Image (cartoon, rainbow, N blue to C red; front, side, top):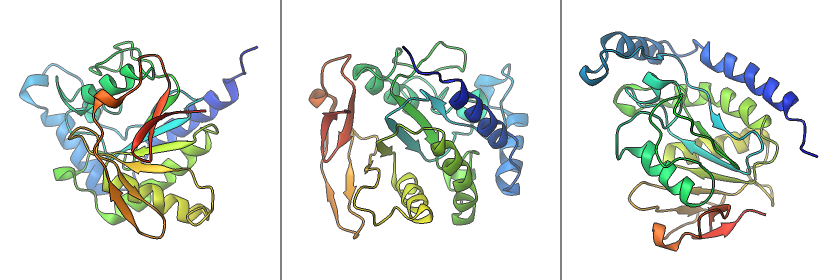
Length: 237
C-alpha cells in the first residue's frame, strides 16, 4: 500500500504559499519586480513570475539539492527553481545528471508546465528571490533560512544534501547550527558541488576540507538512485 502523502502535500502547499507571499527583503523584492516589469528581449511575450520561488520535487525525497537563488530571467521568470535559464544552462545541466541517475524523467528544465517530475529528489534554494548580481547579503540569507527550515521539516525522508556552491553549503550549516545538529554525530551529510563537472568540497564540521573532481562517466547506470557522498556516487538506502 502506498503511503498517504496528503498531509505532507498539504503542509508543503502552506509552506509554498508563505514563501511566495514573503516580503521580508525589500531590496530583493524591488529587484525581482523590476526585472519582471522590464524583462529580457528574448522573453518579452512572457509573463514573469516575479515572486519568491518555492522548492520543487518529490515530497518523499531522500536527496535535497540546495542551490543559491533564482536566476533573474530563469526561475524569477518561470516560477520553478533551476528552470528556464536557457539551453545548456545550469537547469539543463542539473536535470541531465538527475535523469541519468534515475531522479528525473526529463533532461531539460524549460518551463513550469514542461512535465518534469522528480523521484527521490527535491530542489530548493538558499535564497528565494533573485538577487542583484547574484549576490544576496548575509542578512538576506539569514532571513530566508526560515523558509528552508520549515520546508525541510516537510521532507522527513531527506538523508543527503547536495549544496551547489559555498553559499548554499553555508546556509545548510547555518540551519544545522540553528537546530542544534551541527556537531551531532549523525547530521544529514552534505557535499558542496560546482558546475565544472561536479567538484565536491567535502567539509567536516571541524572545518577540514578535501576536494575531488567527479565526472558523469563515474555515474551509475540509468534507473539507479544515487547520491554524491564522500567523493563517489553511492546508492541511497
